[in-house]
Amino acid sequence: MTHNINDFQTRIAWVADTLIPSDSKSDMPSATEAGVPERLLPRALKERHDLAPSFFLALSRLPENCPSSPLDAIRALGADDFHTISFLIAGAYFLDETVNRKLRYPGQEALNETPDYDEIMEAIERVQARGSVYVDVA
Image 1 (cartoon, rainbow, N blue to C red):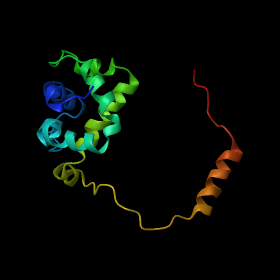
Image 2: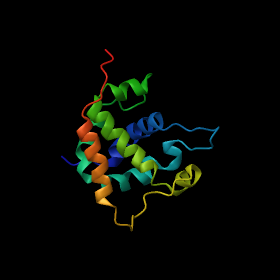
Image 3: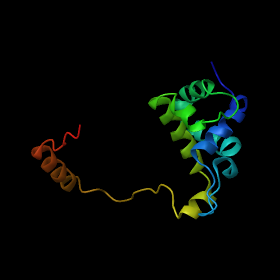
Image 4: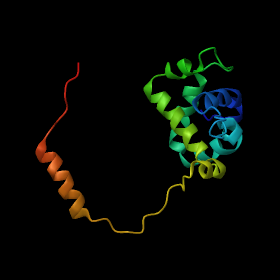
């Protein structure tokens, strides 16, 4: 079943602003102020079309209008759905050049260097040789 983003605009708006509210102290726009629902999320979904079905399925399980505890409603979907929704909303937010400029985030940049794999493997081998160092805190 194919979903149309326009069918979910009301849900997307309250979910997006719950996850990314405005911050006047830092002069950062909310997700809707940055244009996530109508402009940026369609781009993110086009790039990550593999996540679109699970994104829309999760959205369909949320109420149309913002509930009294919106973050609790999103969390109640479960970890996988919360991750999918927050991943796509945040990813869409970072597609906005103004947001990135305010955060002084240049975006992802191509690496034109060839990494020193011997150095990387040396670091990994030391960790593997050391073994597990987790401490049980329960």
